[in-house]
Length: 100
Image (cartoon, rainbow, N blue to C red; front, side):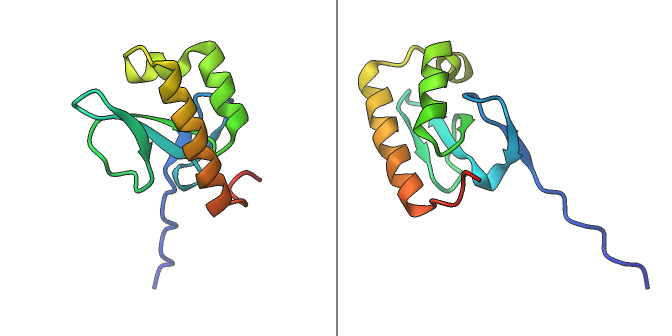
């Protein structure tokens, strides 16, 4: 009997710090078909997505480089960045060990 092949872990790159991590460790920011931007906790929402570490520093880097705007292909207002920062802080409280 042959050993089972190990299941492949999907990797994604954080748009803030440019590091590749397992998909489950990152937070998906999604632009819905109607143009609204939110955090996708489940990873299944329809729309264009970008991945960030659950760290406010990565969001700050992505904002400075306009990486989120390029990834989601639309300009992002300041209030959306503020809402994302609040949501990321909430996600980090739920999973404090995600950033190792």
